[in-house]
Length: 407
Image 1: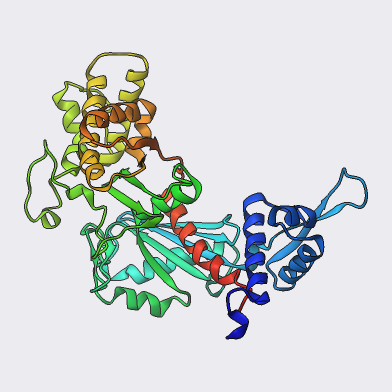
Image 2: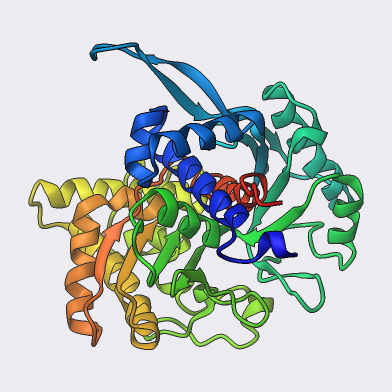
């Protein structure tokens, strides 16, 4: 135990090792001299550090830097193969799985379509999707250190049941988590999909450097993620952020909302309302009548409305954008009144389709509806954000384990 007491040489070495590894992740390959300058370590100490990390298989020599007097300086990088993690993004239609190396680079991906699958096949679906990504990465299942699975809703920590996601068949068995643990050899974590979008934005995107923010997601469903003091706030049953059910002015008051799966904020600003609003405004064209899911049609309508706004048009499409912005701002104002966040991040296909014209209108509405004035920005992680958040979540824990040289 004495060897791990804070302040002892062993712990100080481990702290320096981790600082160097984090710098290599952030900056890419660095020379011994550069690592020494960035960490404040002497050249001999930096040399010992790199030798120690190389022997542990955590860094590799990756070339030299030329163009300076004297011998070319050796460059070092994090050994990408030191660990691998996997992430899964689950919805009712498909499971997308990906594998990343310890540097965060995606090295394998696989999509499994699941519409109409039997409810008792969830374990098979998960393992099939995971194995597809693992195979694509040229690995075996045993080489994956950790998996994070993102789903709609949340698993109740008391019962193990998935709540707030009645549209996900087969995922509600109280024994499901035990069954998956029995099939998968690595630690498996589960997280709400919108929470994972917030993880991606906090680590890589618009919320970097922010410890208090709300992320509003609007795509197939409407939900939120709450980050308070730098940490996700999940609530007692994991249901924090299920704001689709939030009672708001202008939407019908529905009782037993989780059974009815209607009412509240989602009836004011969810994807399903856009076609109805378009009809009320007299918008009757090929787009409003197009086949497709609610959110695909809604995204097309909002994109066209944003284009009309950018051209300065004053017609039904501009009115559609105004009504949608007011609906979004109405629910956000209630959330802001309770949480008083530093930042609000707007994310999801519907919001991305609206671009800057939509963001500006929501900001203007919030200036009148909300007591505090958080900064409002659009998310920047737009390529599979749930999957990216799952990988980042898995990487954070895995790096802590693999990079710990004090053990």
